[in-house]
Picture 1 (cartoon, rainbow, N blue to C red):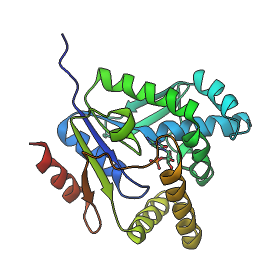
Picture 2 (picture 1 turned 90 degrees about the vertical axis):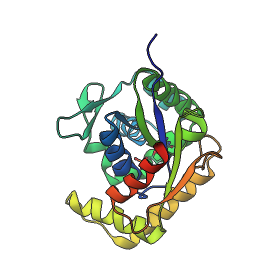
Picture 3 (picture 1 turned 90 degrees about the horizontal axis):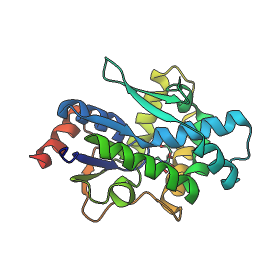
Picture 4 (picture 1 turned 135 degrees about the horizontal axis):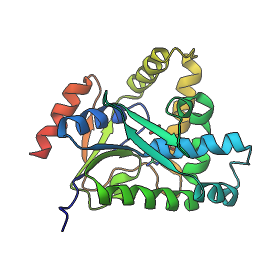
Length: 222
Ligand code: C5P
């Protein structure tokens, strides 16, 4: 029988550094990285392109059932996201997609479909996954659970740096308001809200570099 896969979950709000930390941690451990946010984003991108009403849960669910979202690990360690076989790694990071993912995220039918796919991936390989509900809903029996947080202002600064690095023009006040709103929506939805699992260890990444945060997490794994 195949050995049980190792599952490590990192939940937390946007901009807390989860994805960069999760990716670096997965690399150090030599296991896969699962970016669950990318799945909600990719489906949102497909819905926007198809021109469907994203608030229509049944229409979005019908689309989700005929959508393939895959991850491809690149030689440089980054993760490419494909939507129905086409690389959309950059297209899923636009402001339009970011500000519209809440439709897919709040829809119970969509969460059911995406959570099932995430669990399937976890059956096949050891992974570090990041998202909002991984320790609470997707992998309640994960081997290690972390909740990564940081000061709100620092989270805003990090997002600004990321966007500037991607050569996108950003209005700081607008970004701050968008992040506040995204936090509110993530925390308040009735299914799969952003929540610390009871048995998750809180990692405050404020003022820490990616490597220091990974070091901190690694200490809990041995
Ligand atoms: O993590 P990221 O910012 O890429 O996630 C995009 C959006 O997808 C989040 O704002 C959140 O609402 C949603 N999401 C979710 N559940 C997850 C991961 C992300 O609802 N497990």
